[in-house]
Image (cartoon, rainbow, N blue to C red; front, side, top):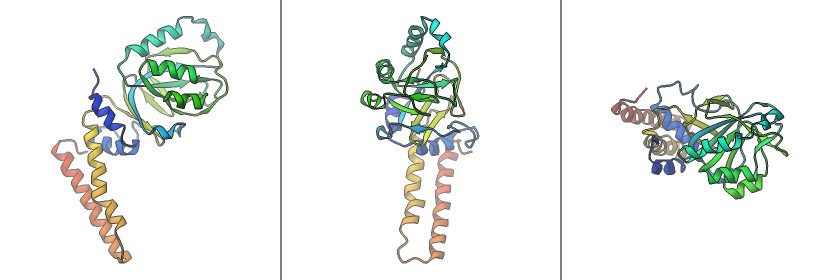
Length: 249
């Protein structure tokens, strides 16, 4: 069962990942400075596609190791796993060769195959190739870098915990990702995420942002006082909202 309705997924995609983080920060029981988002730098190779949202399907690869090609059923079994999971799906790939990139799991063929299986994109700490063709397929990728060859990019294991860009991700986690990086929502913290994100964005737009932008004719001291009042109002609104729901940390 999906933890949130598909309609919420569509609306979450309208916001950037930092905005979703601002909402999640109000709901989480975890340390928001240490949980959920990538710790290493990612690169979004399709920023024009905007954000992607989906549930993690996971796979581990080791393109430098030719021995993995001996498993003739690997691709068939792996694709059955991907097809069995509810979508939309984001494929999270741990490359055992990192920080080196020996070969790319992703290119024109694999992107189209995964798109047919209900996947919207990937987060891989390895490489990608066929960038124009991946764009044409509408398959978004956050990756370490571009790569020319595929080497021995066979699935090694899947449906398992993976570590990418310093973050541990479990199969089925809700992920929001864009050019800023990715946010992997801890299990059980998906409900209310959309509402909290909307609220925090509106809260900023109604308090601190207008206070910072409408200062014609104000002295520096007046601006500072104005910003202080707006910041206090921002915090009070959030406190009232999430205390009422029993969610304020």
